[in-house]
Image (cartoon, rainbow, N blue to C red):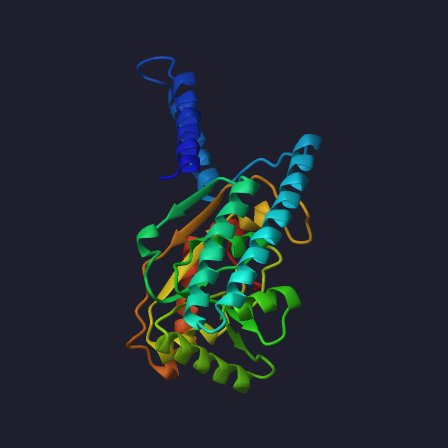
Length: 304
């Protein structure tokens, strides 16, 4: 358990102790008092379960957030420039570029999250070094930082054939994989090539199955690409469930709020016996798994 998790635990314990002390008027509290204590305990657990936090819009907190973002940008520019030089030197050694790209991600991602200062809880870390296909829900730029930091060495990502120049160049230098999504058939063939590449080079893969970033934080439908890759590679799927990032860095906002974040690794899902004619069933199964582990504020609405 990390420092922030301990702090959160102690705050919840103090909060519960306060209610227990406030309402302990006699050895046999009245039923109404018992109900009040129980309601307070339920409220604490609900807030904890949904990563509840009270937003702070005071002037100095806004200024602090802006300063942190500026420092993050400068720090990322420095580390990116340093690693770009390393990648150019390592051009003849593709696999070593993957390892260096992961090292860049571990250092930069962890550093950026430290600068931003959000309390982070990591659960299921015993699954964090499994070789497999890591999937992750996506609702904030913070998801990228967390994935950079928390995926194991030997993990590659997927970029579109045409992306933003700077990030695309770094992807190429890091020897990450690229797909062409110009039409469904070409995309499927690209996924098959990705599967062959990760098997051939003994790599893991990270992919966002929603295919895009959720604007509200609520889970979007999953694309089928990660299932196609699983069918071809037979690698297990390792779900990473992120909560709170949509509150910490909201859509179209330049402010990072101090919302608590949780990264939860779920047990790997074996795929070596999956069948090609059940793709839709597998997509729905994994999507339902995420729905069951997300707080209410991030579950998809019925209309979705």
